[in-house]
Length: 222
Image 1 (cartoon, helix red, strand yellow):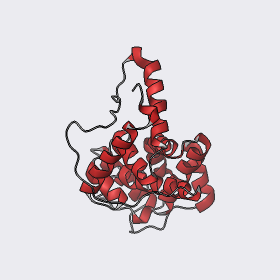
Image 2 (cartoon, helix red, strand yellow):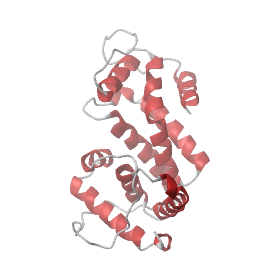
Image 3 (cartoon, one colour):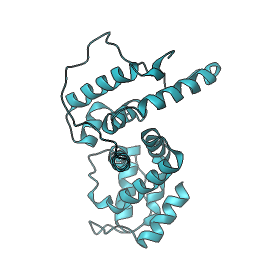
């Protein structure tokens, strides 16, 4: 996916995005953190170094593809959506705000692209609404640990398939929030920023999504 994304960027654009400053073109400078490194990559691309976009693709390609796959439920379509997300991110790079994590900004693009694809399938996602806050002990589905034990591979595979089926039953916006929170390690604040809503709305929608998944026929035996 990395090579294809970079090749498509080169073919479509020919050059890098329009620079926003007079920073010189060159290699990415050393950074003290992943965030600093990503910001340095962005600055280098905006200065004309197209190759500086490659580390951003390499770092986030798996998460973008997995988000698209869980949103769309189709491998071919997920790959196309992931490619489009990187192309769109490259094209809009000048609008990236350094105070955002690049991952948050990129996932916003990917999620919106997937939602657009779902809408073209004539699925109608529901609107954002604040609802009652989450209560302790409420009926809701429990997600598996992100670190499964080696002796539980088969059970984990079955569980993942069931969760994937339950995700596909959710409205598009709810589905994207669940994926961002449980699979992409994004916090409430980042999801609120990515979806242009409030933290309380994010918490409420996640709570409702978990309840709905718990009532799904796929939840039996989980």
